[in-house]
Amino acid sequence: MAHQYSCSACEFQVRSEDQDEVIELVRTHAQDMHDKSFSADQVRDGIQTV
Ligand SMILES: [Zn+2]
Image (tube, rainbow, N blue to C red; front, top):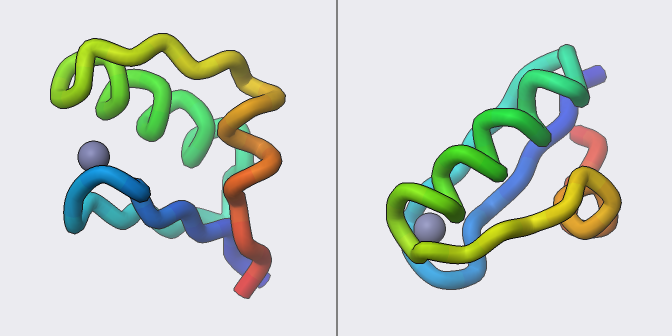
């Protein structure tokens, strides 16, 4: 089972079996690309298990 997140603002997508890794990558992406700060909980809400 893997955890997947699709950015709502661009085509960025990340998938990993390590949920913490997904959260960290998404938070870095949002900060760098969209100048947005997401909490871990906010990212977790958007993660799909695939
Ligand atoms: Zn994005």
